[in-house]
Image (cartoon, rainbow, N blue to C red; front, side):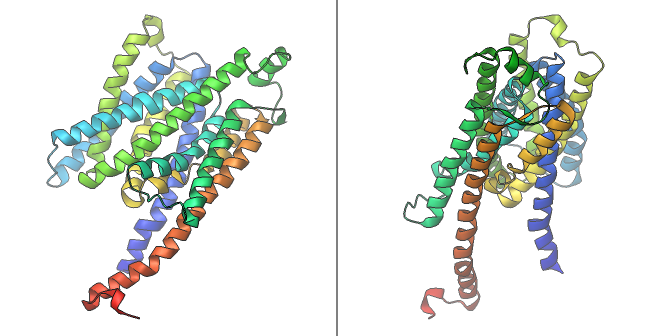
Length: 362
């Protein structure tokens, strides 16, 4: 019974939780895109929903601190939370939503498939992955990473003809109005800029996952880490917003899609996604969390077609195929490594139980 509960907690719950997180992230991206299209400033949108998220996180933080004897909050932990806030809010959310305003949730979901590759590279830099060129598993993960980057580049730099969706959408209309313009036309320039911003956002998101995992190993108070991370990130973003948004009217949010998007994003992002992702990072690690990003393509494309009437282009299809093939190359390498390591782990445990070294057994 105990083993069954352990499998449920370490395998089934994280798997289901990450699927829920991907769905919520795509819902947040879609409603955020609609709000940004209505004219609300990216800076104000991110600021308001993060401050609302702090209020929603506060009861859980207080309950955790009073339910049992809490771990002391040291300067080192606060410093990490400060850096996590800078990464998670100023860089990931700021670049992500600005890139989203220039492109679409479908492009964002497609580029998010680079996270396994980014995470793998960062893991090697921080010596979480070994540099073993001759191993097939390492080769598979490396080629998969490169293929994912190529696929993301195709999606960013090439749209191609419309394959599915209404040709009367805003993007298609603008393209048809400028039939003889090159890639450096107004719309294409914004699309490329949005893609570059999204690439940077997911690179920083991979770094956030790794640093968050390391922080939780030293300080396993999940709600405390999430609360202080959100607080620091919101304060940092408030300073940036005050410097950028000088018009008083930009700070006013009228009832409608903008106000609804702020509330929904506050519930889905700081309150739900951050806490669930932090739990999965603590339980399974950063690469496991990154593995679920390709699921966002299907969800984002569906939401985009249904609610935003966006079009699906040939470049998105080609790039998505390349990204997914590369992603599964990485996963194949991971699964093979797990298969190789499993017997060794069992032998080590057996040797530890018998008080002898497994190398002495034939």
